[in-house]
Length: 415
Ligand SMILES: Cc1cc2nc3c(=O)[nH]c(=O)nc-3n(C[C@H](O)[C@H](O)[C@H](O)COP(=O)(O)OP(=O)(O)OC[C@H]3O[C@@H](n4cnc5c(N)ncnc54)[C@H](O)[C@@H]3O)c2cc1C
Image (tube, rainbow, N blue to C red):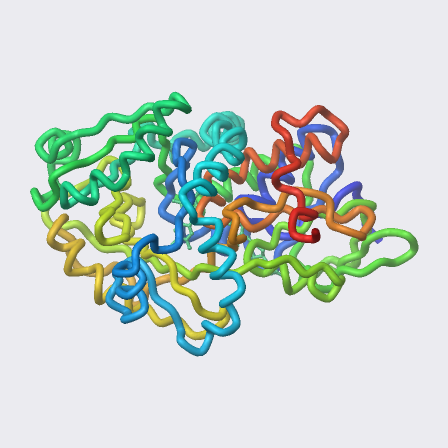
């Protein structure tokens, strides 16, 4: 029977970063996943370490925008009709959290964590020899109309208040940065402090290798075997049972599969998202990720090709993929950039684990001694993985947390 201080369940960017931070603090840790590190949601994101993002993704603010989504004409969103009754309470909470004053409140609440996103990745990637995956070129948001550019004025105001660097550009200046972009947009904002990743899978794997270098143990196993035995937590792995006094659940969108049966019901939904790699035509290229703000997709240069990522799809996590958003966004993307043929036959699909208030849960689990939760990072999990790792490791080892963890407590849903 193997025994460690702490078992971390889930080797995505969040669980792996927690495991590294605990191991660095002298805790003996086992990291358990049913697959390899970084192969879940953390595999397929846009690769933006969004330490400078201010507002969370929001519910459509106008009737016309909502109608476009309802009629399935919106490039940025899709839904399965049969799933809507199930997700309706979450959508109502999301709509409430998307009121302008609530968005500002969320931006302020999340800032201390967000403000560490880039620095914590830089520190971890330096330790892990993974700096080669980080690009310090910022990211670029493009606006095709004056109207859409004006609509984000509030974000620039708040950025000024928070001291977050950005450079508004006209189309020509943006194309001086990214000469392969075609002149179909009028404005851009270059968020200069953001960092992007050329291979998110390789980055998580490098952090997992750093964990192993610190003496951390990795196991293959099904987290759902977790139970109490002999006064400890026990999980079954391919190498036999594993015991620990503490367990961290970092299973991303699969977390409810484990904690639900333990009686912990927190209102998580998933926003499914897709990516597809394309070869650039000729010598076209990008130096940083870009967002086509009017059309709700991103293009990100990756080692595998240009990764086109889609917005949110509201559907059951395990329902078959319905990548219809590509039909809507591909013509727009081809207007903007010379995308060649697809690298893979089919797109990849993942599920962003999202709470309606756009904050993760990073806290003790309610009513379960020795159980900790770190999930629900939504659109920002890649960004916040290492900052979450540090925060939770500080909380678990009795150190002073670098920021107030209260806004991320599971208890916020239990009142
Ligand atoms: C299209 C798209 C674009 C995105 N772009 C960005 C971006 O640019 N920047 C950003 O910050 N974030 C982005 N995100 C969000 C980000 O990818 C996620 O928030 C993040 O990957 C979540 O990490 P995680 O470690 O919580 O979950 P995961 O990476 O899903 O890790 C959970 C792990 O749990 C394991 N697991 C599940 N069930 C079991 C079980 N029963 N037993 C054992 N193991 C199990 C899985 O194998 C997996 O490895 C994007 C997401 C999508 C879908």
